[in-house]
Image (cartoon, rainbow, N blue to C red; front, side, top):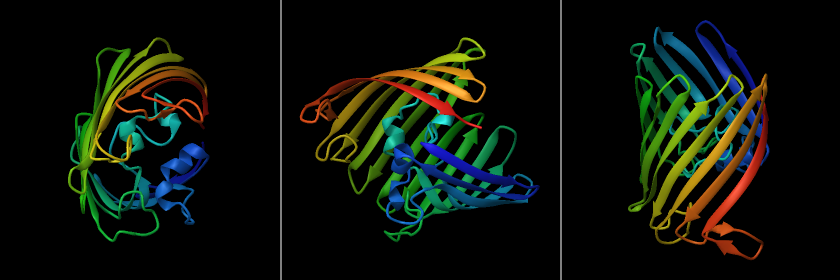
Length: 270
């Protein structure tokens, strides 16, 4: 994935133009596949209309969840099921209110989730986020869609952080998904940290993340090391997945209900 960002931050206004290339980025902007915006990760402008009140208009990454599209901003290189099958971006307008140093509120009106250029299904989605002392309650609701999400974390010591994400979503009746993940991370030095992600994810009535029909679930453990030297980050990662159905391709002709994988990531950001 290659991510190119041009931005400007003025005294009262600014903009972000963020384009992405490569398979990871293409998967994240799949909702606009075939359109001129299929490379657009974010493209928005904002204006501070008063102290503590900011209006943003355009296409921007989702406010739900613990993880983001860019690997430079995630601890684990691979992504969770909650992130991979939740919303990626929204096109619309949102208002951010800074109520105090520790309390914030966001309200927004958007096109259908992940549809950048047009509102193909012609319904409006509503979003809200309440931030309380570093913990966030997120809501996204539209026609036949409802998602409630909690994202937060706690510094248990100077070197030990525990991140938390839990979400539940329903679509068109009983179809939907739910999940919870813990992200314990230990910083051992200025250049090295190690972190674990444990996630349980389930879907009902053939949501499509795991199976096309019926119910299914998956449990995954992801262990990631992170070595940083200046702008360069090196991440070796080992991951184990175990599902209730044979959903993993272990060869061109074979599938299994579990998978062990190892990946090495090189990330450079500036």
